[in-house]
Picture 1 (cartoon, one colour):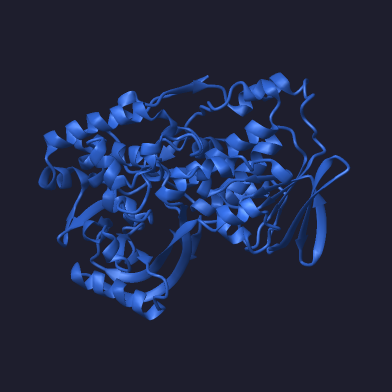
Picture 2 (cartoon, rainbow, N blue to C red; picture 1 turned 135 degrees about the horizontal axis):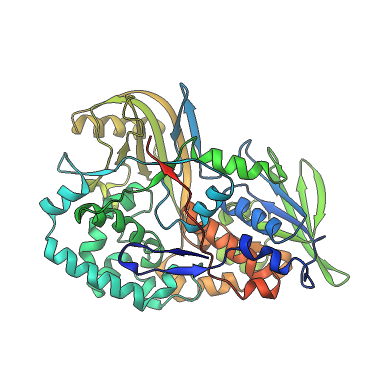
Length: 473
């Protein structure tokens, strides 16, 4: 058994992983139909984790359909002149238990990432000096104590899914932070959260952002207290290489966009017919790992699905790799308000020896490429730097979420009640927040809950794993 301790010891997990107990139940598989035919739509983190978990549980007939020519979903490692640049997911935080477990299992090399800083009033700070310069340290420590208490009041934050969260967690984060006296903690990482594409505190229900904020503040407070720590780790050969390795162990069909999913019930069982390239194939089960708002294009929607999927909000998040000079590796404090949409929310320089930068923007609908690129140049000039040639741009429909009103009306309870109906299961970032870890953890949890024998389910939701070795560059 492994024991995983986090900073302040507020989240301790001790238990057995699927791997370590696999042999104990392989001889007793009365609840396991290994011949079950499973289709997974989408080869991102959630789809590949779902397929990998099912395979570990003993299922043999699993096919993953991916419309792109690569795996990874919102993980996108772009190679330029022999170096990898992350234009999707970037970091692994300390509590990425599921992802670290996969990295360990597949021998994925990791490295310690560069510390990201903060820009305020055109001046760069590391987090330690930002706290000392712009925050009341005593007030911050008091807010931290309140934050710790809040986490214990709402332990459901650390569990997969949203269907059982307290109604207070439906509040926009600004209101929730005020009610529970944690404003200093949330403001400390506001620019980082916006820079990562997670919208604005005034709009987003607290339950989403509180999936990540505890991990984010840990790195900052470790640095302030003089403890070892950093803001995350990276994958040595690029994030996408990890998911490519996992995909290579599965039956993944690329350039296989699904054009139709038809579901019926025949002779006492569910039948799911999936059409790709004009050819229909029958399965027993479908796992929807594609964005649910996009699934409307091919799924034979039932009325409840149509109603729920129509309520999903996303952000237009643009990531741009460009040649530049004299720019910080930092999130921008002055871009965290909703009225600042369109401006650059962060710059990153992932290779300090190269004059190549990444700009991150939350964009309003309908903005032109020329206008949004011009804003990168304006932001660079305001900081005393330059923006030269654009190397590559990636646009994402990012961070699916629903409003406070829809949450109060029981949105996630309704969505979770559909799991398994018509042979259909829903995974992906809407179900547990938009990070690689939360999407992978939810997918693993859902597969274990619905497809594992009872003696495995008895161990869930715990899944401690060892941490792989992490090396500096």
